[in-house]
Structure formats: structure tokens, C-alpha cells
Image 1 (cartoon, rainbow, N blue to C red):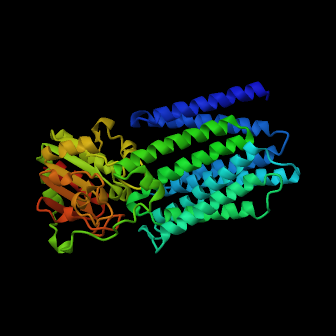
Image 2: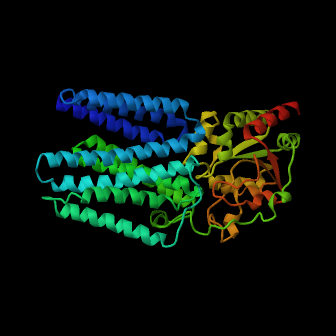
Length: 464
């Protein structure tokens, strides 16, 4: 394949990446955008494979085959509820790949017995450091999301000081590496990678479950930056552009998520966000102060309402109840009930989690309201049906300063005439705090699996 053809195919892949990202901006066109990006990646892989026909192409082919096989199996077998974990794991793989490429490039440079080019040297250490941080941080995020370790913030005395020391040590090692390009001490690079891995772990440990969408988007941005820098090492425009797109979009998403959490970006980047406060708040009366209702009671409430607002949360994802929710919407609309959905930006375990689930169930995009639009509707809503959305509906965020979520914009479900919360039990949400919403006089609890409860509501509404 000639250099001209390779360059043109790379440009085509880059164009498809950009178009794919553009179409991901809107849920109705997101699937088409995803397919465009997939086509771009396929073209990029073919170019790489053909370009290595004379130099170990079989190793590249085996890698592409194994990667594709793992991706296909994961896409088919992983449940939607585990999608955030998979995103974190795949994001970590990208960061790890960038660090490994840097390591190989350094080893190749040593075998040539020549000094590294300054641009390559800077790119090498930066991609190694950022990639290792993203890899380690993503693994911790995966363990928290998979509940293989506590989702609560892990803090200790002097944590910020330790993090600062490790970060300064990484910066010092980078400076030493660049300063001694002719003869880099053999211990510098391994120490740099180990320090970056340690910092990735320390960075994510103090982050609580309620803040996980922010850290996922931040780590995604870091991986993109690492990949883009790796492109400078390899003189590969496709890697530079693709990584820059991921880094930029991840940064924009991080800013949007931090705004949704009402946290300054500086706090997200440099603070142990999710760790302040830490006390459980409100709900001190416990489960005895809540009012439990039956399926028939809720069905009658919904069927004779004028407007119903459905508030999906992780409980809907766990029960895979999105299709049942759509069936309930259809039944209510047949009776002339206006049905809308209130979507909080950080509901679930990753950015856009609820949008993805509802799109899968073919819920019209026009029915999905963002935070501000939904809050404007709640005062005139007859019934707010909350499906496991614990933390994003917690009124303590408005008034209780000791709460870890104090100041976070929430969905004002308590302003609806009636609130019905679907939960398995009175267990607290991912942030680990109690919700005073459940004890308000206009709130009722329908206990049980979300899918079974919604299916029962569909059947009960039909009978009315």
C-alpha cells in the first residue's frame, strides 16, 4: 500500500471519527454515529495490518483478532447494568496500551544505542505517566463499580499531602528523564511508571460512588490525552487526532458532570471529591416512618393522573426494567395520561446511563427532560414515579451541610403532588446516605424488584 493511499485512508478514518462524535451529540442519531466511528476504526485497523505485512504482520493480526473476539463476546454477554464497569475496564486498557507502547519505544531506543529525540522523549514519558495513571485509576473504578471493594470514599490522615508528594515525585522523574537524554539512569523510567500507577490508585480511592460518573469521564479524557501523545512517539497522525478527540470530548464531559454535581473543575481535579462530609443524614427515624402501598393503589394513582413523571435510576438498570417502563408509558398514554421522564445528568454509574437504557427501549427522545426542564414540570405533576434513583432525588442536598451531596442539583420530585418510590428495600443509595424524601407525607413506597413491580403496574392499569 503506497504512502498516499495510507494517508488518504487515515484521513477517511479521522473524518469518520469526527462525524461519529458529532452524531453522538443527540440520542436519536447516536446509533448511526457509533456505526460511523466503528467503520473508521475498521479502516484504521486494516491500514495498520497492511502496513505491517513485511514486519511481523502475523503478530498484529493475532492481536486484532483476539481484541475483536474479546470485544464481541463482551458486547454480547455483558448486561446493561455492568456497562459502566466495562467502560472503566476498556478505558483502563487504552491507558495501559499507551504506557506499554512507550515502554517498547524506550526499549527499542536503547537497543539502537542512540539518544532519544527530545520531542519523542517528552512524548514517551508523558504518555507513560498519564497512561499508567489512567490504567490504575480505571481498575480501581472498576473494582468499586463491580462492588469488589467498597464504593464509599477511602480516606486517611494526610491523604492530600501524600498525593501531592507522589505527584511531585512523578514530575521530578520526568524532569530527570528529559534532562539526561544522552544517558538516562536505568531506574528512572521504572520508578516513573510505578509512581504513576500508585498515583492512579490514590487518586480514585477517595472518590465516592455518587461521583463515579465524574471520575469515569475524567479518566476517559486522560486516556485520550495519553493516546494522542503516543501518536507523537510513532509519528502517527491517526493516533494524534483520535486521541485528541477522546481527550477533548472527555474533558467537555468532565466539565458538564462537575457542573451537574455543582463542583468546580479544580475541586474535581485536585480535591478528594466525594469524600467531604461523609455523615449519613436525615431519615433518622428509619423505615418505620415510611408509608408502604400496594400495586393496585399505585395503578389507580397513575391511571387517573393527568401528568406522570418517571424518574429512572440505577434500580431500573439493575432490574433491566426499561422495556417494562416503556410498556407502562404506553398503557398510561392510552388513557390520556401525559408521561415524561426526568433525567439527572449523573443518574446511574456513568454519563448518559439512563439515556442509553431508555433509548434501548425506544422511549421517544422528546419525552426525556433534563434537570432544569424536569424541575419546572414537577410542581404540576400528579405522580412522580421514582425507580431506584436514590441520591439524585435526595432533598438533603439542598439543606443538610454535613451531607456528602450537599449543594448538588437534584430532581425536585418532592414538589410533585404524589411521589411513589420503587425500591427493593430501605438500603441507602450508592452514596451511602439515607434519603429524607421517603419520610415525606406525599411519598409512598412500593417495595420489590423494579421490573416485577412495573410489570404488575402494567397489568393493574390494564384492568382499570
